[in-house]
Length: 331
Ligand code: TRP
Picture 1: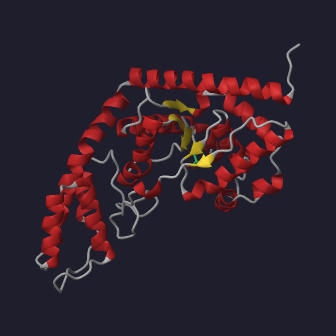
Picture 2: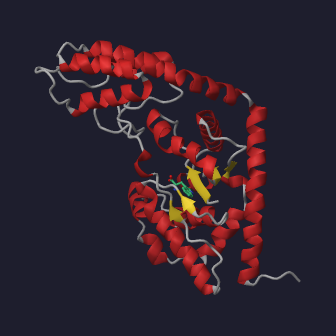
Picture 3: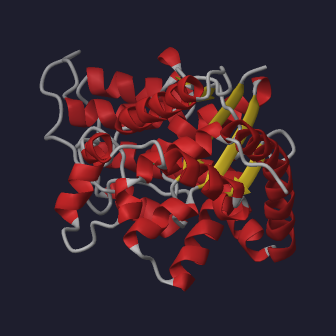
């Protein structure tokens, strides 16, 4: 059975794009693999959050992923900072990580440009910490988006380097987990093509959005002036609305509006109203779960404690073996 691992940045709330994308795949992956999912709170220190923000963000992410379907009995779900063994491996990896290669990482160059007054060593060694996250459980596979491919490549480099240096195949060389064709792309509401929190305000529907907010955002969605010829091809903004309808509404509803579009009788206001109601119905139970979980401190604390315990079991075994390989001996 493959060991699959992924880190989750504790920033922002989950939107429908995340839900039908990464989260759905995580939920599926946990059925067939030994999965480790963790909240990367050490990583978030590179931007210096306040103590209250740090804790609040970690909790919110934990709650939302649980509500979206991560199962703490099937996967090992933990907070990175509960596993100090990661820091020790990070230190060992840093001893063989070179300034030149770290400086060449695209995300580092971008961050350095964006925060020129805070180019700290944590930012520079972000790839070593991420490699430590992965190698601490000797993961085989890491589901990563395009933006993280270079980081994964560094983890492979560090793993190979360690193996070569100590002349043994200790670390697995982690591979990208390929989702194949299963990835559903969820468009945003502003016609920009992709739902994302960094797009404009109102582009994304968050799982925690209440009914009023959802209705307001959907009613403001970008459309055009309507079809003028029967069966004409839909422009992208309209195709986007239909794509959204397809994920939250029944096939009958989709067909109904499709027919109306094709015979030019469609009224976008009606489509949006239906889309809003179906989105509300779809997200309401998840939102309720988020609210219930957020109020249940005892449960959240139990999940985090159990996750940390399972993660440390695996991590401490790695650290024990790595120390031995490097040559640390007790007197
Ligand atoms: N860098 C990842 C991101 O920005 C988060 C992350 C941290 C991660 N450690 C990881 C992802 C280990 C996969 C494996 O999204």
